[in-house]
Each structure stands twice: as C-alpha cells, then as structure tokens.
Image (tube, rainbow, N blue to C red; front, side, top):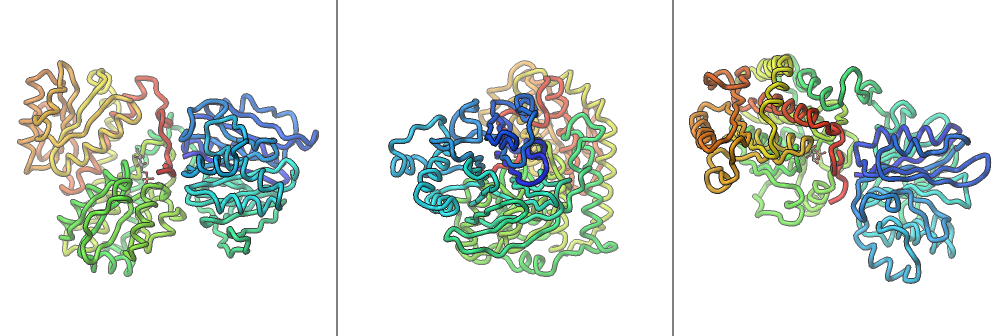
Length: 594
Ligand code: F6R
C-alpha cells in the first residue's frame, strides 16, 4: 500500500528513486510522484501525476544533476487518485516535501486543533503532516518538529521528508508501516521494502516503530520520539537480483505460476533431512502443547488457512479455527485455555494481521507467523516464524505463495502427527504433477477462450475442494474482473442458484471420493438451468467428459494441484480481455492499511 523511496548521496537521486519506485509499484499504482533537488540551480522541483511510474518518468526533467530526493507510488486511501492528491505533498509555505505510506486516523482533529487557519491543496491526510512539521519548525529544530509531529499522529505512517532550507539532509520516520534504510557505498536509500534496495546496497536497517532517522551524506542517526538515540541491527540483503526480474515471461504472474514445482522442491530441501521432517524444536513444542490453533489471515493466505485447518485436524488431530484477520482483530471469539495463533502472510506486512497480532500479544498469547519475507514485521513480532521459501512474489495476484503455504502447512501438520506415509515422496509427486498441468497450459487457454465469455462465473466444490474454490474464484475475479464466487456445491441451491442463467460458467473442482457424486449432482442441477459447466477433477474420481483431469495425489494435498489450472484460467481470462495482469485495478500487493 503505497511505496516510498528516498535517496541522499553522491549518485543520481532521480535514477535511483525512479528505479526503486518501479520495483515498489506493486504496492500501489494509482499515481506516482518525485521531488528532487537541482544541484546546479539549487532549486527543489516536484513532478507528480495520476498513473504509473513509467508516466512519471516521462514527465520528470532529466536535464540536471540531483543528489537528494523522495518519491512515491500511491494506493489511494484519502482522496481520489488525481494529480493534486498524488505525493509528494508540501507544507503551506512549501518548506517541507513529504511522502507517506499509511493512514493517519486523527488527521481531522489535528487540522482543527493545530491548523485551523491553514489552507490545504489536497484531500489527503498526508498534507496535514507536512503542515504540522512546518508549524512546529518555526519554534524548534526540524528534528524536534518532526518528533513532536510524530507524537501527535495516531495511525500508521512511513514518511520521508525533505527540508528545502537544508538540501544536505533527509529525514524519515515510521510507525506500523514498514520502512528500511539501505546503506550503499555512495549514499543511503530509504524504502518501504527491500526490493528498491536490491542492486544498490547489501546492508540495511529495518526501522522500529516510533523511530526517527536523520541522514546526511553517509551518516545516519536513529532516535526515538523523545530524541534518545536508538540501538539498531544492520542486516544483509539476501534477495537475488534475477528473482525480481520477469526474464523470458510476458508477466510476473506467468513466471510465478511456472515456478511452483521448483518452489515445492525448495521447500522439501529446506524442511527435510533425508526423509525426516526437520521442524524447529521450539516451534514444534509450541504447536503440540496448544489445545487449539487459531489461523488468522486475509485473502489468498486466508484461503490457504482453510486448507491448513483441514491438515491440522485430519493429519494431526489438533482442533483448528480459521479467522479473517480484519474481523478477528476487533471481535475475538471465546478462546481455548492454551491457544496458539498462526498468522499466515506472504508479505508479513498486512495491517489487518498486525492489528490482530498486537491484540493477541497484549493478552499474553503465543504466536507463529508463516511468511515469505523473514525480515517482515509479522515475522519479527510473532514469537516464532516459519519461512515459505517461495522467493519474491511480484505479481499482485498471489500464486506461488499460496502453494508454498499449503506445502509448509502440510509439513507442519505432518510434523505434529503420527502419520507414517512418505511425505517427502508425496510432495515430490505434487511437484511433478504441477509440471504436468503446466504442460497443458495451451489447452487451458483454449477452454477459457470458449467458455469464459460472461460477466460472472461460479466455482463449486465440497470440503477441501470448496476451499480450493474460494482461492480459484479470488484469482479469477481479481485479475479478469469477472464476478466470480466460490461456493460450497450443496449450498448453491439454497438461494444463489437464482443467479444461474443460460450460459453462466460453473466450474466444479472434484478431487474427494467422499463427495464427488454429490458435487456432480449439484453440477447437474445448474446444467439443467442453462449453466455452461466444466470440471477440474483428479484421475481417481474423474468421469468421462471432465475437461481437466489431474494426477492423483495424497487427498489433502489436492488443492496444491487443483489451483494450478484455476491460476491459468484466471491468467488467460485476463490476458484475452487485455487487462494489466500483474497490476489489477484498485489492488496493491502489500496491504499495509487496515
Ligand atoms: C490475492 C492476494 C491477497 C493477499 C492478501 C493478504 O491474490 O494476494 O488476497 O493474499 O492481501 O496478503 P498477505 O498474504 O501478504 O498477508
């Protein structure tokens, strides 16, 4: 949700910031902007507009050298995406330029309490911060003015700030929204995440909440809100540059779908020693002593959580509940006496999960984060974390993180169980079966062209297939904009069947022997009302005429397979409609606002 990049040093700020913003664009792409110091003419210039970073690049003046600047790519929260609401924002007398990721909950109160006579250009909460810093800096140093402003802000923020009266210094601060400082040989980058640093610096500092940093040249000092210097850890970046490039693929999503077999194999290599699962002893203990697991997640990770529940209950016999993070944060159910909370998050930065984690920690409960980003806030703040090892996922629509989640959840559930089947072999079979589906992608494309011609669609299934349907429908709707629902097959006839018309596409996922006949009768019910049906099944339960038949795998692992054709269906439906697959409208990859 919004990406911010700042730079100060000996190199070209404009180029470093624009490259960083391009890498952060998955965090939001409603508008983009940059403010730069012109080192020749000693002026500050601002360029911003609706649209993508490529457009920003086309309106930015490249004719002068610039060694300091800040930039932003926006996912609108306050105020429509337009030129005026784009960042950077300026203070009333244009002394300060700021970029912001987050949401200030009390910006209206701050306006009326401190800025009653100020006029504002935009509808954003951010502009209020710039005005406050300017107001306070009339009475105190900039360092103190920013910290005083921080002490008044309620909500989340990562801010980069430039002072036009001092072109040698850059400021940044954060609370709840992520912010890193990348230390390069010739300068320092501020960024919302590691992507913008890759290729520039190998060392970085993840800033803690309520911290403030003053940077000049290669020097930086980190303070807390009251101005006391803070300790900090310097970490090493271990992301490979090639992992964040598209390579030969037309889209990141296609690349990431294709990477899934190798992701499963990486996970096997990380969590097995020969044929034995190697789980961290403390994590294993925390999981096994708890009387109930509470999985808390959002979106695709939530859909993975439902399948995780099946695995924990059916493989390990541990009662498990799954909760929508944004609901759970403010409406906790009655908890068991010894719960363990599992936060599932690809990015590890989702604000809805963070809010829930804060509540859980305040109550003294233990927590475990499953994440793809081991340096993320949720990984840092939970008692334990387990890494997904999916590699950087860039497309907004999550694919390989979902399958990685399922594989890691399977390993955790197995590690807690008395099961004796050969898990390593079963997961290896899954990787091969995914490759078999990838080989059929052209056939899936032709099915999509023929069948997905309507504005709406249903995925139906039962049990674990129903949970797979939830993810399949999320994929289709988020990138093709076809209104799609994932439905429990038996529930459709209790009302929603009224939406079935001549030609409505209904896709059934059938992989479970116990319920395959029932789902097929539900499919017949919609077919006889005009639906255009097709079936994704596994060999053991397939019937003549099923359009996509997948290999048989261990029954609880079937969602790792059935989702693959669904990912291709979504991809091709979006491709043939001409949509921006990697950056679907209204979305962002890292949802750092509640
Ligand atoms: C959909 C998608 C989102 C995320 C959700 C949670 O393709 O990616 O639904 O799954 O925003 O994000 P994380 O997993 O980063 O917490």
